[in-house]
Length: 143
Image (cartoon, rainbow, N blue to C red; front, side):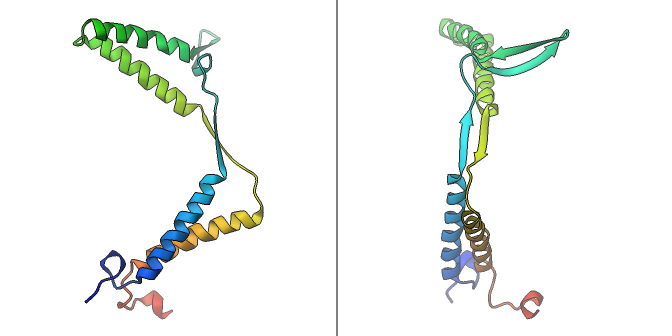
């Protein structure tokens, strides 16, 4: 006996049509999103307030411990403090880059939005329905 999508008796055609619709809808949604960043060597990546003054840590300031850490590692590769400074500065830079990202939806017509929603959720419904066992009768099929 031949099994369908997901090892069930569901339809393989529904599986692939749903998968293509889902991928097309998600692709169109991701194409409508614009990603910008305010990251730069002089940009503040962390701000905090202490003693009634606002202080900021810029990306250039994070590079100072990185430089010392790399120098310490090249001098003695078993130096724990050098590795700590280097990895800490790199993770701080990575966190700063990620936290400075801004996502914006571009303007689109109602037709484009409806197309994206129908492709995404219709495809997801077909994809999931193909994974059900079609030979089994459930109470929701009767209603």
